Length: 377
Image 1 (cartoon, rainbow, N blue to C red):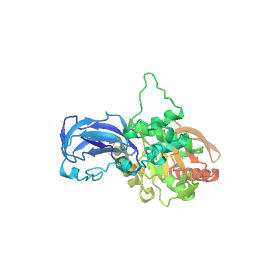
Image 2 (image 1 turned 180 degrees about the vertical axis):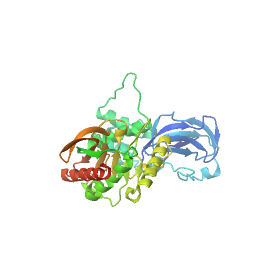
Image 3 (image 1 turned 120 degrees about the vertical axis):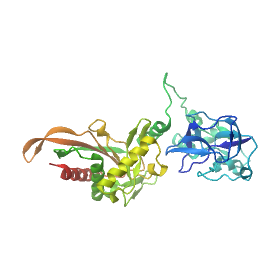
Image 4 (image 1 turned 180 degrees about the horizontal axis):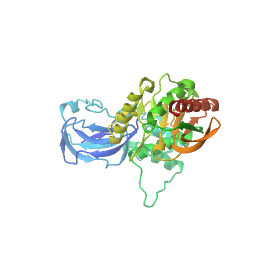
């Protein structure tokens, strides 16, 4: 019997959640026939069969979270010639199995089961152990082929685990969102600035999404330090010459943030079309993994659902996110007179480790000035 482990899906992803099986135990499959779809932090991916033969066992139910290298499917030994030659291919066609899972036994030191080299743990597990000050040599492994899992590390750290009566585990996008937000809360020194934009008499056809993107472009020209990444471990900052804008989008499955690359190159009409395209792809979950990566600055237009102000969460390594609240009518003083005007609340969160208060204030002021000059009637 041959066991096919969850392959390395690339992009530094250490785990995936089983979404849907296309086959069942006892089925005969062909080489490269789709076996199942899995959901990663980036996208939904179909995994093809690396062998031709009969399926003996499916090792994971839908919604099961697997680490790279853990058992996925068991086949009988009636494999085709290509499989016998060890041709594992790539994610287009056949997928590479994790080299860590396949070759670890060959490279481990046989001298000591507790030597550093013999510890079987994925990078994410090692990072968690470091954060919790857990010695992996002391952890009892319960994962496949002696792998140390996240739960093993948490157990060693003293987190016995709790369950909510009647509760349900988070899956897919919501699980990823929870992980990302936890990391952001732990790492970022967040500060939020708020202000109001006097829009005047708002035109019914106003496209706020486009106007906000253009306002961000103007603000980055004023303060380029907010279009940047920051590494808290090395205290290094990287500024970018182009703006890759992450657009926070609410879906029934959770928060997704597609990235519109080099936004300054687009006209207003092009921006409108690109934003609509991303909304459609996010809604159908048929968005390419590459369009969920590489954001240098983020925008959350939460006001189209409700709420005036917020403290938007910055996802590292980015250093800033602008949130736009609900437009409302208010009495404002303009040229010494009180008038009724449409008001747009803005909330700018920054990582104060990399961005000064002055830079943030000037950035927000530049965005506000652009919007007021564009829309005041």
